[in-house]
Length: 361
Image (cartoon, rainbow, N blue to C red):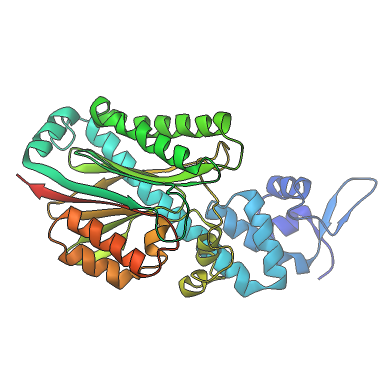
């Protein structure tokens, strides 16, 4: 087959002529030849695989800039392109699940059905039947000269922040203090907005008041009724013990986690990667880096939650964490035992933990 007109190529590739003209302008799918007199675009059969891949990726909603990267990779390494597509879709599913939680929350709040009738009434009823037992602790470790981690546990709030840079201790403390102020002032539908606004203020404060190399990560959960509102930036983590099984309910914003998502690195390889501490998101004064994950998480009686800094999970294995969470009688016991395990492994970093149990009254 020789050259194809734009109409013939559109039919063969399942892309419209209008889309082909746009992709030409963007450099995503350049014609094989453009007539210098008429301006007509001509394509060749060898371009069809790339064009069809573009069509499929547009159908799944991938942004055009990302499609160009995937198509270029496909031409040199198709299996690697497949891994990138898989990682993209895994991220879409995670974000969709978070948005589904928010939609459910808003529908319940705004509709007149019993499940959503009176958010404040529901919150008061739930809080009268269920409460949190909680504890928090932090340790400098055995190597670092100062402690830049901050941990907090209260009747409605769990928070852990891991500061970095010359003013890291101030940054982590300010982040947690901003959320502590929400415990009494924010409830019901305002919780997620309150968390987002607080994080934004902290980030702007870090940008205005620091030397430029300081900031903090932050993971926090604010209880509202039968749900916990989660805000997360960086590589501090939140875990849930439910039914004897421990699951992580946050996603690290790090270079190595993005490589794991893309399939180019295993979780085991990430543990020893030279850039394992490189953050892609943090509260460091930069608007690009501070975008938090926000979601709602349903709470059940008997749940046990752990928030911690990387000073714990990088040296204490998941089986040991699960054992402590499963066997410690009280949150304070769990906090003490987890910090002791980190110190027993050499305590190379500051370590912070906050643990809470959802119990019926």
